[in-house]
Length: 376
Ligand code: SDX
Image (cartoon, rainbow, N blue to C red):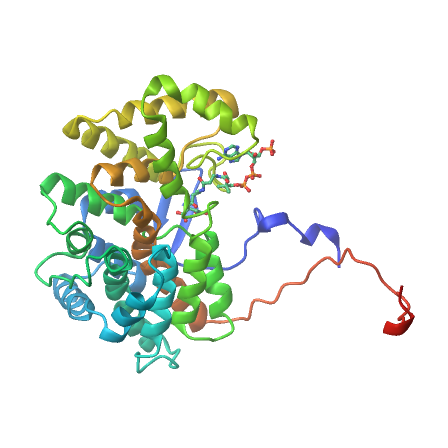
């Protein structure tokens, strides 16, 4: 096998064809089924963009009303899932609980083993609806708040906000939470999405592929960065402390969470630009200095490492100002990205080819076997 086939981390390798999303670096646009994702996130609802992500076109009014009513009907989760979460250890990270919940939900889906496109779409709708409920339950149950049932008279993201915080968002909070939530919905072959496609290519069930995506998202190099970036901003606590704090991280040759991106190497993540505006608006409304701290950290990272902030850098402080518990930031990422993951799983299985790459072997060869009792 020739060496030019190998690229560490598959950097710059086209690993699949897809009609769902592409990161258009020349035009600085995240293209989602032909539309500008950031424009969609600021102009319409999460449900509208989720329908587009799954089905490939924006719904007409009838399709929209039927889709949103199905999602509301699917929101509640079986009592067996609640019981599993109640039995898990109190200090389990919500993402661990989400994996257990999705595995349990699989056992109650009558179409689990049907990988046809139609059945995969029906399963996708059920998982999209339920993962939001599971996200809130994965925090509420271990924290003694019990299972807070979804309200069916609220839109998808306001209902998630309600289940997490126990109160309905005001207009500003609802708009900012829904727009930032929708920013996360899909982003081409991120490692969690790629993991889902690889697992789905064995023609296993959609739930199993979703669990692999959740596992990948938990990593600090991927989804967990938003939680860690928020903790960093809170610890820095004022713009004057930023330089020393960041330098200490760099001196330890560690990563500053929320900066850098495998694809956005020479420019900022388009989603981050919009989330930056929202953070300024919310910081001003709440009388917080988070925006000033964040701006100072961006200046320092640009000067010292020539690195740009990614979407996770802004989402963390944004969600902290919304009163959302820090351990839920990555689960909320999952609750949004589930639309992208399930769309990719359905696309993969509709026109599948098993992922089975080769490895460039660098180990020894032609060693002589020595029986156990003759070895030193
Ligand atoms: C998401 O793929 C997606 O689309 C993901 C995502 C999505 O929507 O799904 O956009 C969401 O996961 C965003 C990324 C969140 N992760 C973080 O913020 C964690 C911190 N970031 C890094 O770990 C890193 O930037 C990655 C993992 C995101 C990208 O890493 P790469 O492409 O493997 O880059 P690299 O490790 O080769 O780094 C290149 C150089 C290195 O310097 P040298 O060792 O060559 O001297 O840049 C440095 C790195 O040390 N570097 C950083 C850094 N990121 C890269 N140095 C300090 N802090 C950082 N954050």
